Image (cartoon, rainbow, N blue to C red; front, side, top):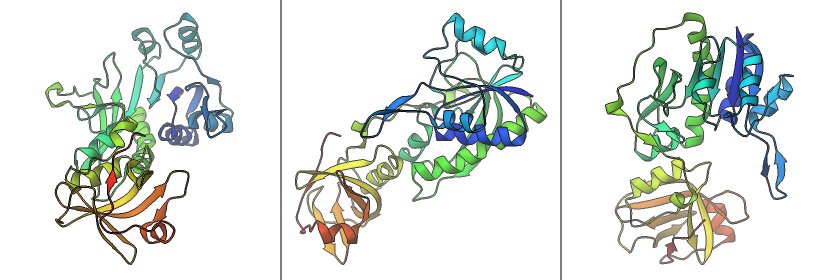
Length: 308
């Protein structure tokens, strides 16, 4: 089958490589333009572009698909179907109609729950115990198309967004193959059950220690690996990468309650957070014991908010 593939980050790159290795004829790859990255802000190709170049595939990087040039490029590929995964550009109505079998999306949630840009993070923040992949026939709406196939995975009590990402990314491409081979009957979504997964902002990752320990723990997990749950300690920005909620403690929220044998426990609005891994600005991620060796902290010290 002749495929166009449209995607940008690692989640999409894993699907692209799997589809190529399965033997599909990927005649065109669409991905976002190269972006500045790293300390030198050098232009960096997307993860999808790197895989496409490795596989010697034709790559196009339009700024928008709302041009005659983009339409002509897609039409010239004469594809049977376009597979879309975390592409980052809106597909106009005329583009959706070009491939013979339309456009199929790999979406990282169990639609209609968590339509939008950040379904994995929103699922963790909400305390969901399960999520999954939905293969969806695309329409003009935001993740509102008919469901072709779904598979569920559990979200463990300590799973981070990175953990969930890796498991879902591995699940997506095999599911697309099933859909392409079996052409399952589409099922309409129940719009009354829909929820919206807004894009994650860095401001959301600033910890408010007045919140319950369980809520802060979910933030630590949801914002790992990006952008990292953040606070300040002794005037310095700190990112917290791993933690565990602990029993109720006395003391004002944000107060370091226990420091012993590598243990760093901070009082929250309800309960406490046992911080297991953290990072100073410009430093490396460290286990609490290693961190405290080079950055001693006394009980009674206060962690506070910072802008990141």
